[in-house]
Length: 94
Image (cartoon, rainbow, N blue to C red; front, side, top):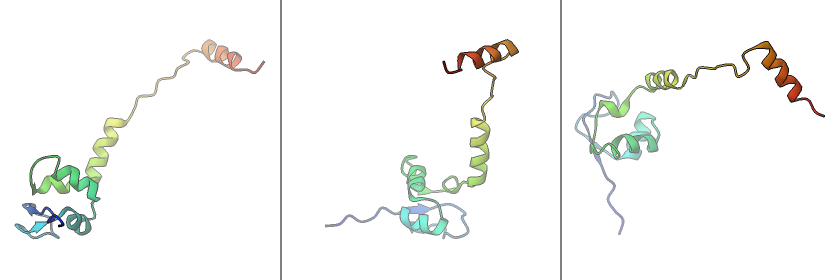
């Protein structure tokens, strides 16, 4: 016997969803265009059991935050002219 799909109550103000209606994760994925795995992580792993405005965070804002965290400072490994010349000679084939 098949299990009944788990439905989550919508408490968000998303324009394409009805407030108070129940949706499964695949239904939410189709309606909002957010991948099923992402929605599953945001709803199930957070132990909320409901869908709120945090579930449908703006992806552009999240990308900006992620990029600002992942921007690395690049330091030159070989700082002086003598180090660069030495590296050049060390890497030559014999």
